[in-house]
Length: 251
Image (cartoon, rainbow, N blue to C red; front, top):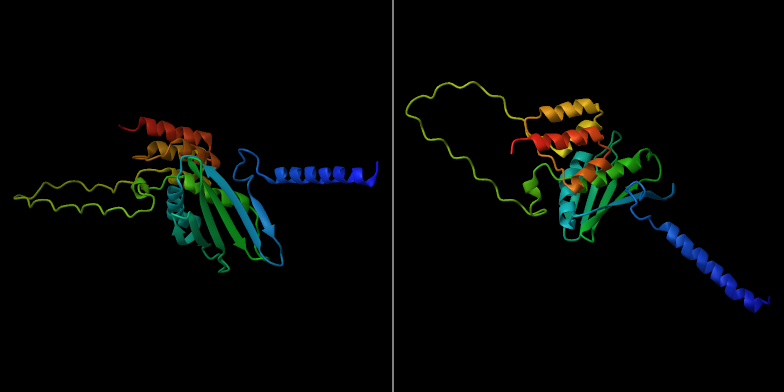
């Protein structure tokens, strides 16, 4: 075989290798948030951590609004949020050494849902990334959790009208009979409350007891709500108790 015949074959081999590397670099179909986690940078510049998750039937505006309202509970301060562009610029709350780090979210439309990408930038040294993958995915998944007050999410970021103030009761002609003092009613138990109890380390049976004894519940048990609970590693018996409690509540 002469040199002129060998050249096309070598070019073909290079093209095949390049195509194979491109395929391997793409995330697998159905990859989870943990599978999408990536780290780049160096000890001489900075570390940039990224991950993303796809959520069906969640619009860009709703995802941005859920992140804006629930990120403070993750110790992340929202500095700016643009629902039209699907962008949030944030910063972590200062740690015990008074260090705060930049966090950015990019939300893009994906079919009938949205893709939520998180980017965390850390200095080159002095910061441990142990458990960072799981922590970032827990944060991304709040985009699938309904906010505690569903009315606040109605217009996906639009200001809601203030409720009418209660009117004073008419003055009674006679002193009413004394009534026993009643304790203030506990607000309805939500998905976020259950997640907090589990992540605080409470045993499943204690969380189930809390669910069954709650005076009222306002669980989001839609498909997206259940997927979010599963992604957050909520035990199956706790999710089953939530579904049973929601089914048994008075109509």
